[in-house]
Image (cartoon, rainbow, N blue to C red):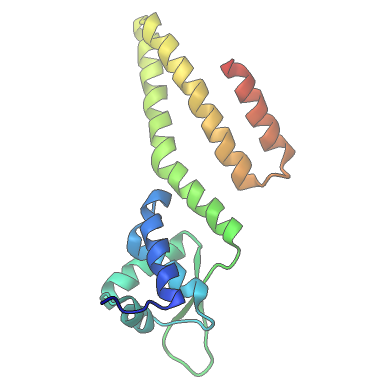
Length: 170
């Protein structure tokens, strides 16, 4: 017989399953979700107890979330412990996670393409040059989409760049 899950548990576990798709670990996503639904800031101990994971694991993951700016350390008067809250602007969180994923995955791939392109051009390998230039144009399009998203839909320069890059793919 299954025990009833609280609404918070459903959200935290579901968010945790989605985390790896966004480029963060399951535990990082669960911590963010817990803080997001919490009405009050939480300590590492409270998060550890709720998520049933070690304090050191929570601490490591909170540090990474702080680095991504999706979790914030807050001061609670009269308390010596650190307390944490989630960034509430979910659009900002999505942008920050998208940019982190871009830095982790797209940027290194673009470096490989550019290095290969330079090597092929230097050795006169025209077939590889053509393929790498084509791949680079497609990657620049994806990069422009990331930049337009991160800059916001109202950023006309980023959107114009997406259109410009798209036109070169035809």
